[in-house]
Image 1 (cartoon, helix red, strand yellow):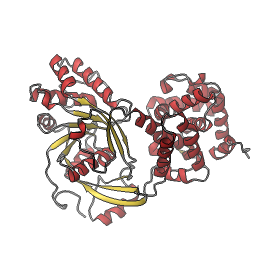
Image 2 (image 1 turned 45 degrees about the vertical axis):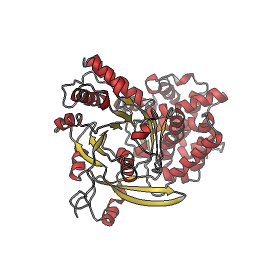
Image 3 (image 1 turned 90 degrees about the vertical axis):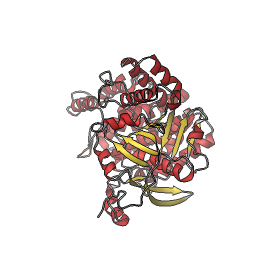
Image 4 (image 1 turned 60 degrees about the vertical axis):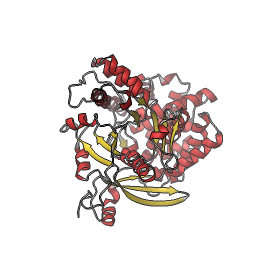
Amino acid sequence: MQRLNKHNYKQAAVRPEKILQFGEGNFLRAFVDWQVQVLNEKTDFNGSVVVVQPRGSEKIERLNQQDGLFTLFLQGMKDGKPVDEHMVIESISRGINLFTNYEQYKELAGKQDMRFIISNTTEAGIVFDPEDRLEDRPPRSFPGKLTAFLYYRFQAFSGDDSYGCIMIPCELIENNGEKLKEVVLQYANHWNLGDEFINWIHDANTFCSSLVDRIVPGFPLDSIDEKTAALGYKDELMVVGEQYHLWVIEGPDWIKDELPVAGTGLNTLIVDDLTPYRVRKVRILNGAHTAMTPVSYLYGLDTVEESVKHQELGVFIKELVDHEIVPTLDGSPEELAAFSNEVLNRFMNPYIKHYLLSISLNSISKFAARNLPTLLDYVNQTATLPKRLVFSLSCLLYFYRGKRGNQDIQLQDNPEILQFFQALWGKADQHEFHIEDLVKNVLANKQLWAMDLTSIPGLVSAVTTNLLNIKQFGVKEALKELYGTSIK
């Protein structure tokens, strides 16, 4: 069976390369590159995407072997009905391997049509690396690579303000556009690139913060043979995403002229302030994901769909959202209720297997960013603890013990964090100290939470009680105790 590429697929239109994309992963291809295709089909945008890799090069090579083509399956509810559809995405013109073809990268900086720069390099991607140098081919960090690209462009057009770029980072960090600009300017100063270049960064370029929302499980490993047989070709970059999508871009109104999303059916908004959208999405959707993961996984479930449809855990998750997360948020109660109901419906998407273990990557930092603000706001507003969120935190601590019954959990986190929990659980399991000591050590660790959580009244006691119940009786029985049903 042949591989998907331009030799055995209809010839894709050749379009000007207007977008530089840092990231070749599933999300950007199922989210941004799909939207570029919609813009090309429904407007006069007429642009294509050049992809470079933030890190390794394996997927860039596969992308070029397929001439930038890949199959996208969108599965879920659409206009109130379940829809399973697929399409070949043709918006990527090529990938550039920065380690072997760096000159192509420098040449791209001198192309007049280049206008947008989009990235998704994970939450840890927008960082300054003092070891990076302009002479490196390429610099190691994403902002280092970007600064080099912008400097090459500045040189190519002799500092002409007409040739600046619009940066739209998609990393899930607050004020990602401002943060990216800050690090780029840090490199410009660190590399002594001069005041003229720094002024050009300020005057000719626009850094937009953005918020993205689409569940993208990625490569359909569990159904690849079936999909390949139906398609009639091999596609190593096939990706599955849900129907729902939202892209909120914070930037000046004139961007709407260059990114003509109006009337396309795309749920892409260009706004003055994305804060309310970000808080709502991070706390409800991402917060529910993070909070349910250790509870459901230790209970014995493996996917999000199983969790929200489960007789007991489904109630737990809905009540956590409705009674503990939503009440802490500002905004219209009706709009918040509608959004939370939509989120829970998306979690029940029958087409998508969103595995809890895939969500569990870096769970400690995710809980700190997505759930801890809710917990603190709830305590401040009610002077009581949110018992379901505290139970989730308790399960998270037990999850980092690395065991589900007799089964090892393949924990994925910073090595220092894993070593920290391994040492604590080792002592607890050897009865060298009490579970309460473990709880105090974890909650007091400011490197994990950016504060000492033992200062929250009653939290140490509540987490300790939950952990003792989980350790002795398991999550199922501990959950019954949480709701006031006696443990057997």
